[in-house]
Image 1: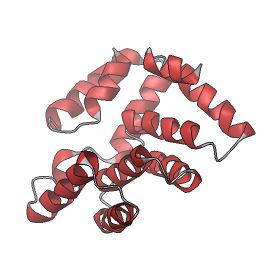
Image 2: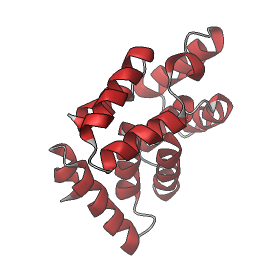
Image 3: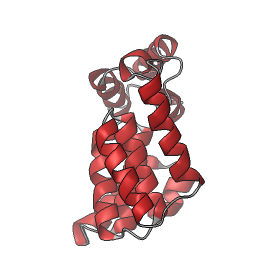
Image 4: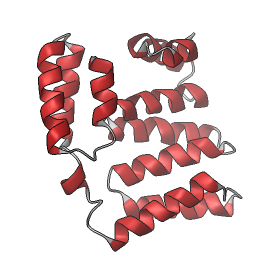
Length: 167
């Protein structure tokens, strides 16, 4: 039910159902991973990292858990930690296209300042304020704030997801 709600875009229902699963089974790998995916979609990267890490610890045999966790680390600016987990993923035999793409992201991040969080991302507080407006059903205010942030940070990958939820 949680996955179906997630697929059709009923994110609140999906979050509630994933959370119910975690109340019963806190280390459920799929529920943790999918709750992490939801958190990324609304800009709560640090929350996502926690869920991805639990999913990965619970089931390290799933490549997507590694990919999601490392990607969230990169998005949160934790490049050194991302490198360590990328190396570990490769030693466990994960060396596919997604892993290689993450490795290129890290290399690009090191080689240029164009990808620094300060340049391309709103602050965590700005994102939290936007999500709070949405959560409080203040959709018009959230839309105005979201559009303003989107103009200020046009390359940010999180803002279109939040704006999509608001619409």
